[in-house]
Length: 519
Image 1 (cartoon, rainbow, N blue to C red):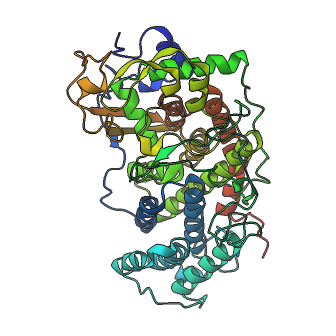
Image 2 (cartoon, rainbow, N blue to C red):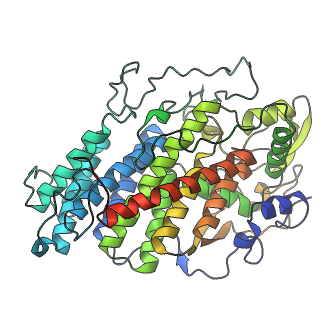
């Protein structure tokens, strides 16, 4: 029987146990009745920091178009740009200190003008973007020109805002070029390709040879030509990347996950399969909203977009935007370094393989594919709610990077704004990434029969009442989509909160001029 809402049976239990009914239930389904703050709407008066963040996000999306989504790399890239922007701004603040030069670049009070701050920020953003997105330099140059600045001004004069921007960008880049990410492809043991693994990771399991069901196995994707390929563990070396404010990548390593054969893992696999067999239109919209789409900017970009919502809501000035974007970008970078340490340490599999193994030689009700709705399929054919071009993320499951990053960013936004309230609404089209060319009746079909009790419109309005509720939505979407079991998400949320709680005083120290910076 088609599930029309989240009431009744196991689905209600799932939602209530995760605290989701309270923040998603806004009338029939998930449909919000009012739209006070529309997610990602236009800003009529953006600050310079906001405008440069737009450029950063678009540059990142352009890269994803070319090479695919790499969430760890995206998070680091955004943290670098936002850190350089913060350091440039700090030179023109009365008390804030930068991350590389401390207070050494502080300009006299008479020079601390809005214009000088904007110029310094522009050059800091521009120089870091040129370096990180080297394949898109012409486009980046065009953006600099459109912003009204000379892209060929290479001044290092520390008495001028152009010089300040260039100097801090150089310092941040120099600090990060050998931070373990292998941006330059020159780490011993690497292939020479930027960001390639140099730690010799090899999966125990192979697509055609299962050795240990608990452990991760590469998954077959289809490329644009329709050919299969099985990517290896993406950025398997990321546990060696230097965090921004943590002491080490392993500082908040999660406890051991459930192993194959345990009652807990069996239960969580069954839960994931049950949800997959009953996805509503609203749930599908949540899954795709949090997956972030083909031009994804990763969880870093997603939460920076949420930060932009806050900027519009609160009518932030430049100073507030700079500090907020800096803190959000860096906490997400730290959550990815930390979650990748746990992923590498435990190397666990995902529902894609676990459901197929648990239900091998059995029939189960499941999502049958785009436009086919739900019905019985062989267990070996089970598939997450996603297109063949992106079946499930190509790295181990435990812990969820989505959950960790989202909880960390949500907590930082609570600290920055002094409130847990968010109040945004995201307007989505159910199935727009996976079932774009199908009607709602086809999407929600049962046993080959089109659904009769669904609305014709695919529009879904998702309420985001608090920051942490939004983080919990991101985490739960991963179970709904079939990418993670519950433990992956719950432990990711715990880790993200711990990271934000630990690091927030360090951001405050930078803002208040109390941070000790080694020159």
